[in-house]
Image 1 (tube, one colour):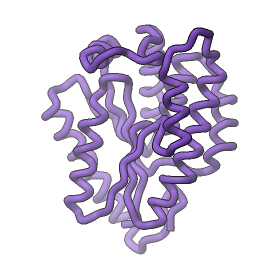
Image 2 (cartoon, rainbow, N blue to C red):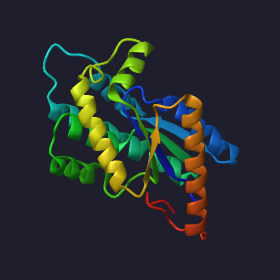
Image 3 (cartoon, rainbow, N blue to C red):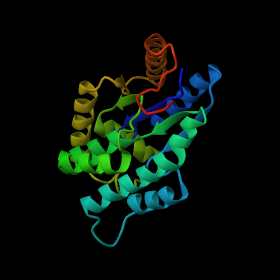
Image 4 (cartoon, rainbow, N blue to C red):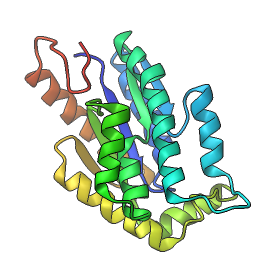
Length: 222
């Protein structure tokens, strides 16, 4: 199989970090090279943008500013890290990608889908993940978990309604996508991990049968 870009999505406290570690071990167990990235962040400039996005300011951060910063960081990461890694035969695991902006800035902030679509085309073109694992968690539970990790950042302080709207958008996107799989993250960690491994094995088997000659996959890799 050609190297692929696998993304883990979900609200705060959904358990992305442990699932990413699980996927990394799963891929390395198959003898594959792996690189893990996060959004926003992953390059020196993108990490600086991450700090801008997440910290609190003594002024209003407009929803348009937040959105543009997200796509600026994403563009840097895709061009400078993800695509080169894929071309060097590494599999890439992403902690968030474009679906996060659709859910958070689209669903949560209420920014029009047409604006998001325009920014996506301008910054990413046709690039997209090969597989998205969406970890579904009740917003109240996710925020409680996030508080247990420490002080909340600016986005985590957006309020329960923000995350409820983001969750609705996530679920709507996943339901309409043929590349996204929903995992119930309200289960025990063991059950979540078992579902993730099962989903990965099923996806691997499907990919092997549908792409036996090693042709370019959906992320534009050859």
